[in-house]
Image (cartoon, rainbow, N blue to C red; front, side, top):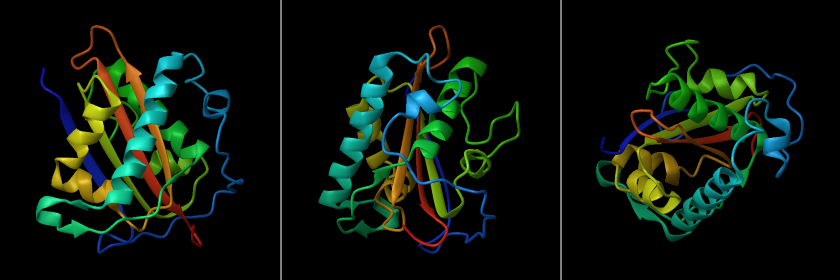
Length: 191
């Protein structure tokens, strides 16, 4: 099948604003996502390298600025910092899409939305968004796919976001094989 993408967002920049309940968040950790993310510790080392490359390419695109079609021109934006909680939310969703044979922001088996998954990891947000993709075999291809799509590009370039988490999973025999989730957020109270 051909690659697919999808996006959703809540928060600043003219999008639906939400108030989230503070869930006792700890300080973001910039590493050890695999060690602290239940259900993803058995991911292949290559998967983590793919995730790191997506973050690097995303920050490169943000530094350059972008034209996001109908969503307009976006000036350069600050780099996003990895947050282990967002990484876990992204990894679990990519794995669920591949293992359970769906491609959607809302998990049809659990009914959870991207925002539910972010909060379940203990991240209370003032703004949040998610890009998903399937079928792209490399980090460069998936980031380019998101940049070529107006809504995904706007999510990726969103200046209201300060943190990122990326999840990749490969599910042999599934419809798309490769599953990607990119989660963006800014914590309640600022970045």
